[in-house]
Image (tube, rainbow, N blue to C red; front, side, top):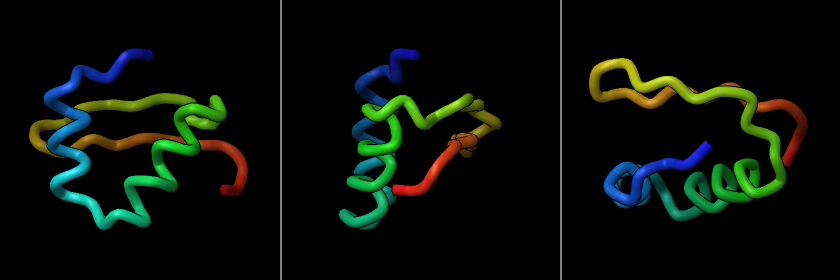
Length: 50
């Protein structure tokens, strides 16, 4: 799953540093099972603990 850079920038702008870093760690560790863009909201399902 590739997230376009514009979304990555928007996620960073709209997240605390702690939340962004945790989400990035989940993504790079293969813990994100799916991600869905619903209007202006990105919803992701993850497995495991960070």
